[in-house]
Amino acid sequence: MRTGIFVGSFDPFTIGHDSIVRRALPLFDKIVIGVGINERKTHMLNEDERVERIARLYASEPKIAVKAYNDLTVDFAKREQAHFIIKGVRSMKDFEYEREQADINKLLNGIETILLCAEPQLASISSSVVRELKHFGRDISKFLPEGY
Image (cartoon, rainbow, N blue to C red):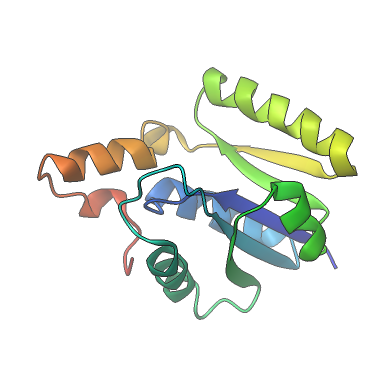
């Protein structure tokens, strides 16, 4: 079974994240969306809310599971029996960061990373931008998947 994990803090899960998941779906038998828990970060939504909202988005898709984790991504991948990490890249800055992470993850346990480029119209959308807009009272609904 080809299993990939798509990981991030997903605070919140944006239309950019949704695009990556939907574009990766045909490549895998199963995708586990891993909601990373980092106690050092301040979150807009707690981990249960993030997991529940993302799971609700994909409730009708049997190939997708959503789980929280708080350890190394490679350890999460091993538990999920995943051989691939799926990551989206929006810019050269993202690419350099993700390439370095991919190298380390490959060295740690041999896992491959699949990089999918953001669709051009979504390349400027990030969770941090959405949180900032919400902080200043702006409507963020256009940046979130329908049903989130």
